[in-house]
Image (cartoon, rainbow, N blue to C red; front, side):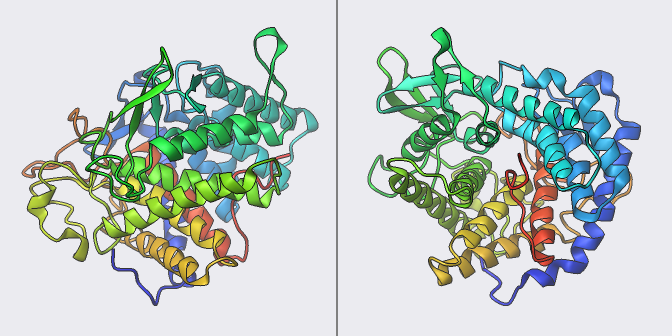
Length: 453
């Protein structure tokens, strides 16, 4: 990436004003045109949202987007829509024992509603707020129950089973942090009390150790900051066995959306620990480990991304070498070899921005680097090449990739790689990223936990 050294956050003010209008129009369009009998919308095909069976992990993004728009610009219609849809349709996600995605579905809906209510963005009774708190607490407990004990720690396991640690899950752990902040008391077998904060810390330490590389010779592909999408453990003895992937090219290459989940996941947990003034024995070691993981992954992103801040879907994909020196030119959306992934950019940019804020009083030069890198990415994503400006396209952010190895992504007619399409997670995280920047322009800041109580 070539970081725009002259960019400032106010540079984006006019583009953001247009973004909120576009995002609202797409919320309305999707709701009016989508056939809900097909299930939750996941990705677009020819600009029209469709379901894609794997797990139920995207509905919360659909209803969370209007809540973020409401927070950004005070739009009462969007607030009313997001609230009504959440209450009507999200209850089964609270007890969804088969996924590790509770932080995606339920923080995006019930979490945003509780934050908005506590900011007096709408009138909510004590009983209504209690309902949101109960939803978050239940969801946090259900996710925390997915626990595998391994040598030296443990982790919240993926939908693949108890042997499988996904790097994605580091970002969904915020549902446990929310439940912890709300004072939830989780009880397991024989009334054993589970400390939800401790569970997040142990999961984070395991993820930092096995999912993130640090250039220390772990294997011949050990490049500092790269990540493995999946880490496999032998559940007979809890020993780590190997890296793997579900959506990347291989266990020894870096799927960039997994990289982005790590970037924002570690920085967000650090924000919680620091801003909430959490104290426990060994916390300095934990923060040191999480900062190392956050910096390493953010540096890898900067060093392995196109000049305009947009990554290709996997930095070790089989044909990426045919693109030549792609880091020193803008991403080629319609190239003949490998697709880009704008959703990874939207997620990763938030990690860069948050890390920059965390380092303001610690390392000024690093803070400026990460912040301006994040702004460089955002500026690109707000451009006409990435926003779905066609009024009939149901997405917001174009050129998102879901599962390239499985061939789940639409390839435009006459082209050779997927492009032009949107995803629910890409649209949500683009909107969340824009909310963060909008708040900063207004002299404020956004975290998922600041107004949870």
